[in-house]
Amino acid sequence: MADSHDSTVSEQRIVVGLGELLWDELPGGRRLGGAPANFALMATQLGDRGIVASRVGADDSGGEARHLLSKRGLDTSYVQSDEAQPTGTVQVRLDVGGQPDYVITESVAWDYLEWTPQWEELASQADAVCFGTLAQRANVSLETIRRFLRTTRANCLRTFDVNLRQSFYSADILAESLDLATVVKLNHEELPRVAEMLRLGGRGENAWAHRLIQVFDLEMVCVTRGANGSLLITPTDLIESPGLKVNVADTIGAGDAFTAALVHCYLRQTPLEKIGEVANQLGAWVATQAGAMPVIDDQVLARLICSPEN
Image (cartoon, rainbow, N blue to C red):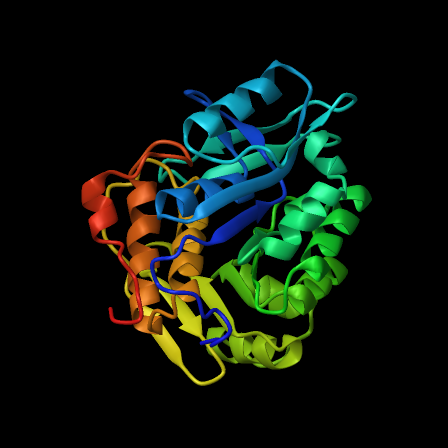
């Protein structure tokens, strides 16, 4: 684990979710979402200063998104406003097990993330930033995201949460993102696809994870396995954390919650085994709740304490 994240355990960190902010249009109504926003909200609830760096339209949906995030304690001063493009939406269908299928609207505000002096300052101050492939589907946002990542400090924890969606990714986007990342998180279905696209060679999760570490000089690879837990691999360690049996409402946002807990604990130099345990607990709990942004109650939070001593 990196020694560069050397602040005290209790200090609040600046944790940025960089990319899409959108409305999930669910069978039961619409809910605010987007992986970076879900991540930032969970980071805030865990005790860090979660910030959404995104873009919404200058429309009612954009105003409602800002209001809801502010109400939940998130800093929205880095959510840009677009006069020309609408706020993003996604049509979400759920199968009988609560697994979502997405149809993502194109040419929306978050496809036009703008590099600004304000964002440059944020990038230079961030302790951690989480980004994915989806927000890099359009050239404007792709260039802004890469510039943001290159502006961060050397010891900033840059977490690439892969999130392969529809056809909005490529081998080039994957490779460039991995080059800029410190840690990569992906699920057990995405890993073999990534391994094939990047021609990693080898066979199986362990081999592919070690190849990613070697080729892209990563500190850690995290593989989530849904109900079967997770796998955390560093250059020197491998930890398998068992899954938790829960009654699933839907799985939207569960992976983002897992990532938020992963980052929160990693910044505090928590032992790998404890990181897996805490991240699995939060991800599993979110799966028991409707939507991607549930409020974590005090009982749940009490089980999610991570520090070097734990």
